[in-house]
Structures are given as structure tokens and as C-alpha cells.
Image (cartoon, rainbow, N blue to C red; front, side):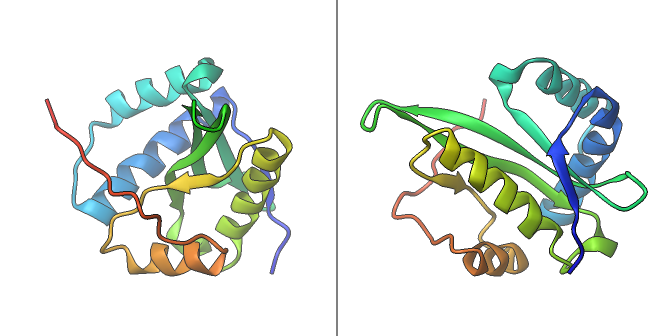
Length: 151
């Protein structure tokens, strides 16, 4: 396994992250996203830490090859922030090489250092590769269900 460079993303990563999100939506859900809208959303997220923190993994040449977004949810039950992993994408040619593991371990150590009681994420139940990856890292299915109403 290689030692991937994992770091907080910066504005120069916006175009790569936006393309990752367009590719992820198409690949995992068959959804076509508007690249310009996603790019605007990524740029706003990168510019405002209250919206979350993007992480990227880089190859030896310094190119972004994967990204994820961490957002926080306040828990009044625990008087702590839950950390959520969202928008995970690893370029196909880098999958199954420990890239996501390196990103997860980075985020996990930062969440622990910040006092978060857990890491959470949601995943499409048909994403068998993602499910096996998350389980292999020690995550487990929660007893909570996810509901939504779209507008």
C-alpha cells in the first residue's frame, strides 16, 4: 500500500472535486448533475468552514485523486458535534489501493481529537463496494433510518 497524501482541500482543488461529484452521482445513482452548479457549491463550501471541510488524497504528482466532505451535526443529547462523511469519491484507477482508508484514518483521528463521539455517513444500500469498505474500516449499520421530503 502506498502512502497517499491526504490533506484539507483548498480552492485550487474546486474543479477536481466538482468533477468527482458529477462522476460519483452518475456512477452511483445514474443522476446527471450540472457541473457549473456543483462547482459553485464546492467553491462556496471551500470558502466557508461552517459548511464543512473537504479533504483530498493526492498521488505522487500532487494531483487530487479522491475527495470527501466532512460536515458536523450538533447533538444536544451528547453536547458534542457528530462528524458526517459525505460526497466520497475515489477515481476508478486508484480504487482498492488504500486511498479511502488513508482519508478515513485522517478524518477519524481529527474527529477523535476534536471530541466527536462518532463518525457517520449515509450510503446507497445498493452500493455493495462502499458497504464492504465501510464495514472493513470498523463502521457498522446504525439503527437509525434516513427519511426525507424533497421540495
